[in-house]
Image 1 (cartoon, one colour):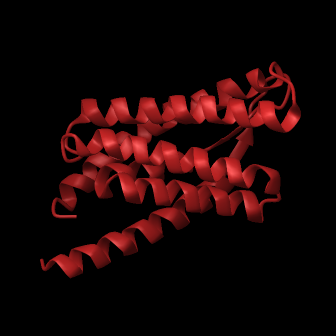
Image 2 (image 1 turned 90 degrees about the horizontal axis):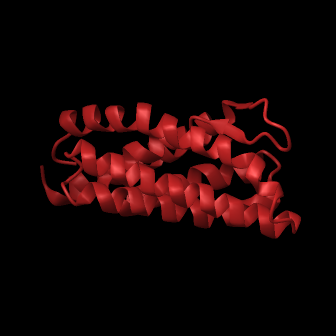
Length: 170
C-alpha cells in the first residue's frame, strides 16, 4: 500500500478510536467507595488499541481528544485541561513501549499499559489535589483509576493484539 494511503488510514483509524474513546467514556459507573468513588469507564480500551496499533502519536491524540471531549460535553469543564495532559502523556507512553517491538510484543504492550496506568493514577491524584486543595481527598479515586488500568490490560491489550495482527501494515 502506498505511504500516503497508509497515513490516511492511520488518521481515519485515530479519528474513529478517538470517537470510540469518547463514547465508551460515557458508559461509566460509580464504585461503592467512600468519598468521590471514582469514575470508571471503558474509554481506555480504544486508547490502548490506538497506541499499540498506530503508535505513540496516535495513542496520545486518541486519549487526549476522546476523553477531553467527554469532560467538555459531560460538564466536567474544570477537569478538561488536566485530562488532556494526563491522557496525552499516558497514550504517548503506552505507544512508546509498544513501538519498541512494533506493537507485536504482549510483554512490552502490557508494560506500556501499566506505565500509562501509573501516569493516569498519579496524574489524576495530582489534579484532584490541585482542584480540591486537599492531599488526602484524591486517595478515594485511586481504586477506580486502578480498575481502569486493569480493564485496559485485560481487554485493551488482547484486542490491540488481534487488530495489529489483522492490520500488520498500519
